[in-house]
Image: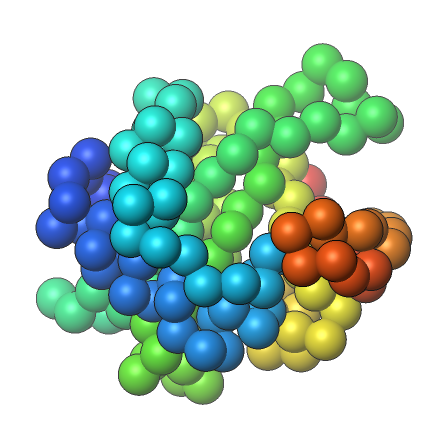
Length: 167
């Protein structure tokens, strides 16, 4: 059974998320497709991931096994300027991929965010990340738009697809 477990603002939890973030498949599908150093990840985790108390990151648990990580950022949709919109960034543990955990977690997250009075969820996904696109679509997210975005750190034009789920 899939559940959501609040992440703690400590190095033990950060190291779990860090190890999954630096997996080769995760790097390739990340917005900035480069590995992170522990020092930069710890600073990002410690200072950025816990910025908004209602939207701290969570682990996805499969039974008692931590199997994924989800973090959130506040977002804006031009069409809904006065609504709470949250961007979802999900990472499934390498050894748990392909089991449908991402889809299950995204479905569970919808109720979790409804309870927090969130209007909608968003996801920016690299267009070549077919597994993520499939998970979001299977969880009820709809294609919203696409764009080409220049990523300065990697010197690339990145094809991004945006998915949306009104709660």
